[in-house]
Image (tube, rainbow over all chains, first blue to last red; front, side):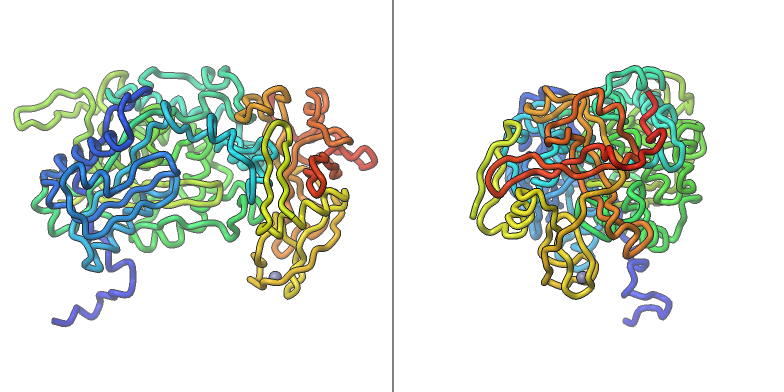
Length: 419
Length: 172
Ligand SMILES: [Zn+2]
């Protein structure tokens, strides 16, 4: 049967709302998991499949990413008795989650899979640390690394701090404005029983913590933890048979980059990140704009990465990010809360997945806070955001996740609440 | 020819296949900074690559470039990751806009060359020197000799240049 004339199947817009995240799961955020990344991954995937109301045998696709610090999809599939039609383990960091969601949509759209699991497992504190300590710091310096590691320019904080420094120079952004990101995320984490850091910190606490590399203080940097996280994607049609309200995917931009793939410092204002380029695909494909978004999830590897992303994806004007992240917009009860779980700065670090997990739960109107459970088994959210209280955002309809990896690479995904 | 050497306690290696880096560091070893100039579009590029990022042309010619410019941004490292850098904290990682090809091919482009702040003889700068440098500081290139065919380019304060009265520094 011919498709209606107004449906252009050559456009990504055709994919709007056709696919959904139907299950999310994680393991405890710890330091010293005492188990392998394979075990962490298995538990996260098991939890996400159960959350979807599916059985392992319903899964036929698996995607994961790592940077030489984790297990592989087929091992997890083996441990759960899953027979895969497609699996892919890609090398990558923080911009991978949204990119793999896009890839999962492509697999299902092409008829290669029906339901795909994406996972990331890492002993990010007790084994391989992202900062490049231990064996990684001792590895020989060769090839492209001669132009960074030879200068003691290695950890993510060291790499990215120049973009922030230049932003301060160009726009007058202050350390206190950016420290507000940590303070706000810590408020959110306080209402998240599973967050690794639940204590509230103030802007002064951040500014008084020791300098790691200027402009970064210790509390400007995310928490390193051991954990696994997973999400389940299937078609909107199949989502009807799943347990929860689906989070429909409106659009994805996956691993877009700035015009040059060196250390990204040659092209454009260096405080402009990949989101500046990605937004021109993201918003038209999603059919919404930043003004339509109720909650954001930013890749807060550092306080300032949140600011740079929100600016470049158009949530505020370039140069006004310092004001945006400190004026209350981002906090629970504000106009557009960001990282309501506490994010990487407070909840835990799974390289981008946990903020997607959080937004899915927010879109279900069922975040796992301390609000009382009603007779129907659902939480009775109080919308009282005081310490230890609710963290469900009222009437969330549209969310955006902003992923980030190297200074010039990013991904993003817009979701909306399904029926 | 392949190079294996130790610099600040770090093993550095350039293998025989990495002809671009061998050539780059060979010029550095002669304290004579060179970059690849694209044979098609004529633009210089940094760091060494196998193709032109502006026009995709494969061929280029190593060209002498003056090692002078101004600090575009910096990071001041207090917590070193690499063991060998711990005794040198705080050290500066500088991104210097070369005067050569500044603002080309677009107004926001430049050859931004990385280096540590160093003394004129190529050693990592002492703390009192670190305090004097910020965005806008005028720099000149110096070299740390590591091995035959391998010197690391760094930046030192250009004492002959007009320096900004107050180079921009992170507020203390
Ligand atoms: Zn060219």
